[in-house]
Length: 272
Ligand SMILES: [Zn+2]
Image (cartoon, rainbow, N blue to C red; front, side, top):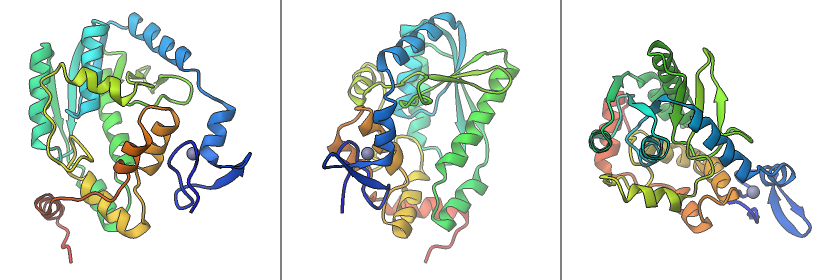
């Protein structure tokens, strides 16, 4: 089976052509034609952050949003509020991490609790990814929270920009800023080390969400690859993570039996 020479796509996950004697996936072909300008994206990020004063940080208690919160406070000196949307399946340790980090940075921290049972149940029953629907709903909750409380900026811990820009305008005039745009995993880990962040033992695939493991497992059984493959291939393409680590991340996860049981029970799904 052919594997893309630039990212980790293979014939199962993407269309691959031979270009100048080398296998190259369609996404990498587009990337090479319209290569994003790293320096310009980082400069845009810097400019917009210097203009901002107050912001909501979407704070899941996972490692990336922890780094984003740190940068918003310590690098850009924003007046921020860290807001966690708990969809009902947050890892307890992520909530503890979030509280500890917020206390350490002396930032107000709020948890908005919702019930995403509908999204998660459907995804697990059908062997689909819950991530897109979950993140869409979460961003909408946060957008409304920002609007209601007079914030113009909503900061998230995503590492991939929106195309060629690190931000996008949401409805109501809220600017969503992906503060980790094009920041490598190595840089992020360097920052994490400065903070009282503890890695939960979730078999390496997540630092905050209980659904992810069982959902990846179910999807794997149905499709034979990870629904994270595309996102992680992009990280490799952008040079944000090395190939070996990326391939580990798209392997079928080993979900601890206790977590699987807990998730299925809570969703009311009878497994086998
Ligand atoms: Zn590729």
